[in-house]
Length: 296
View 1 (cartoon, one colour):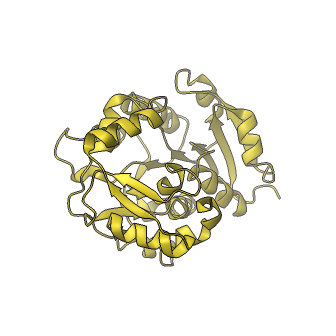
View 2: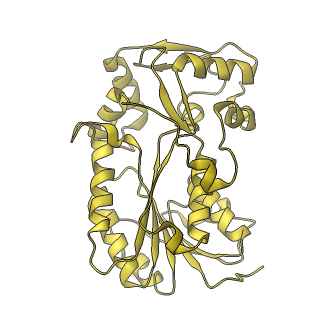
View 3: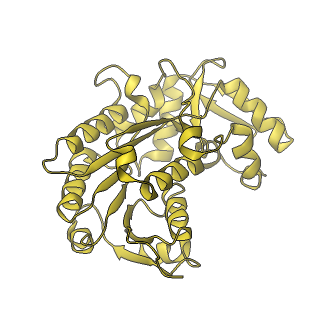
């Protein structure tokens, strides 16, 4: 079925676990969507059964001319820039082009680590600087910032199939904030299809559960039916492990931040249920739904 609304949404980061669900949610609501991707074949596979009202534009962050040429006629944008050391400049440039082309609302995937002290965490700082820069763009439309905490999917993506323990440098009883990527996507879809003036320049924190590593291990054990434990390692050990896994994705400063991040005042975001009209996923909910990915 073709689009039945006047909205056209431009989506960046469309093939990831958040972006792909946003695209599918929008298409299910008969909203026309354009995705900007590096790999057109991958996008075609991800959205193989959702080709109506979907346009795929191939491009990257180094040359934004394909994006600029495709923007006219779009009313909203989901903006996600992943693993780019020039995040502030890239997001600001894309947002500037979008507003100039007539986009009225940008939903920006930011992060929730603003409780870190000033410039103490590069991940927090580049997202904060990006938000600040976009808000300062002259003659702009609205920008809504989504500030998720730790993705529940990280537990699956960062461990091998059938894992029996997971590692971090935190004390076993240190609280951590968690959010399902499905809930992030659903919040984004709600904002992108709702009344623009209802959200204006809002910033939404997205943490659905606070749990310690010990409690996460208990949930994983309960869901999988096998014993999964938490192993506390030193910050150096954690850094060395992450460096091997992430060296081709993130700069060293980001890996350092991942390996040393300690949350200040982790808390559940009470407004998620208001935005979604339902309760968000718990760790039990998310892991049970993805039990197959946790299997040996």
